[in-house]
Image (cartoon, rainbow, N blue to C red; front, side, top):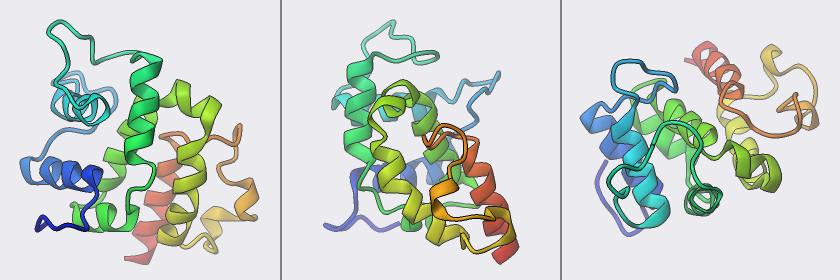
Length: 158
């Protein structure tokens, strides 16, 4: 992706992740997806993780909130469509996993991302039977596993 004045910082991070083929698997036992996690920490804090910082497991609530603030306005369609499928969704899932505690309270990503994801996945498909109000179904908070439904719906549209 060409860098432009219009590019969102998270979009640029995802483009770098795609070009360098960074792992985004939430429970990767080989690399822990540490390149992506470190880049997301940097996006949230504007600093590299301090030496010895545990990037696996729960992040400090302050960093989770900052990460949400940095990514909530991201153009999801450009991110998802510019990365090899389904990597773009994987990057979103990593954010949702890292920021899960703060998101369960604030629901800023749920509010900002659900309409974009619904448009990407064609919520009228059978996979999303019911109205937007019933998605995400669990506790009304967008979770990484909700992206599996988006991935399935997008596969059927390709």
